[in-house]
Length: 305
Length: 175
Image (cartoon, rainbow over all chains, first blue to last red; front, side, top):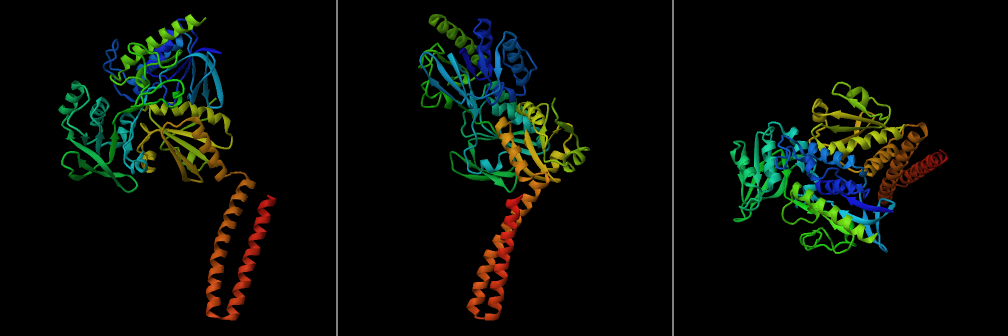
């Protein structure tokens, strides 16, 4: 029987692991499909306090992990498939195996949304990409589109100007969710063009992407543009599928936690980071919540013993 | 110890295209974080399979092969048999996905004598079956034209073909 199982290995899960391990809870952490979480594809993290940079997301998450390891966190590179409630315990299903635990911290984060058009599947990996840092390299002197108006979209667009001859940001509405500093960087680049308020209505191509048909969300006008790559950064959806039997979820798919706490609808189950964060979605916030979750789990386990 | 072979634009031909075993090539780069997830899986599988070869190529240093096979997204894994690409896997997929693709390729392209004969025989039988179905239809059309001599010769040929296929099926089941 485990004391504490942590699902997820982003800033929330790893911070929870650091605190839980230091409190001698001997946590077992399941890393999930993306060890390190969303940040690992970020080419530069400028706003994590204490790290003035330059620092890549991969480097930052590597440090998180080493710190959690240092205090004895046990890591498993598997994915939690389901969690069921037992009598004073939780049954965590991981592949064919069931791990029993007294307490659980859900820190599975969120995964990138895909472009909601039928041809997306056909062209994914053949011009459509969800990872600018991975694939930007293949678009030297080519034209690319970045879809989205958040921080990731702005950062991706600026990053892609290193390679591409032209980067067009396509966003559905005038309002940009991105931080002003990120928008400014993008605005200053002579290689970046803006298509606002437009959406990608269809991807054009044969075996590979050759262009896109855009639609103006206000006038309804259509326009075909040539491009070789389409980078998608239109937000993330929380990953909660495995936890539906132990935690209540709101209408947008986020795990509901009590205000100012990481407690879910089930005592002994805590949630932290982007899986329950409707508002901020920042590494430092996730880390803070990871700390809260570990301390609340510690209190819960202490009370029960 | 990992048996993954690091290939370059220069050694690709020898290591991959002329490989005697079915071969998987992992296209990766040091700045690609999802690629780092595939790498340990690859190391592990390479220790398990004697009848399959695992290679990787760093596209940051060796872009020519990636260009040739039109790789524009990594991590990308391409599967090669007898010098030709037969399958691919895109993205940082979990171990079980890579493993089942490897098993599938080994099944489709066996390297042992019995396995190879099986594949050849079954594809021949499949071909014959398809041809004899068509043959039957053509025979029917000759029947409508009412040329008895040609018609009976065709009937005979069709049944000989079916018999030949039965012999092949027997051979296959004896293997």
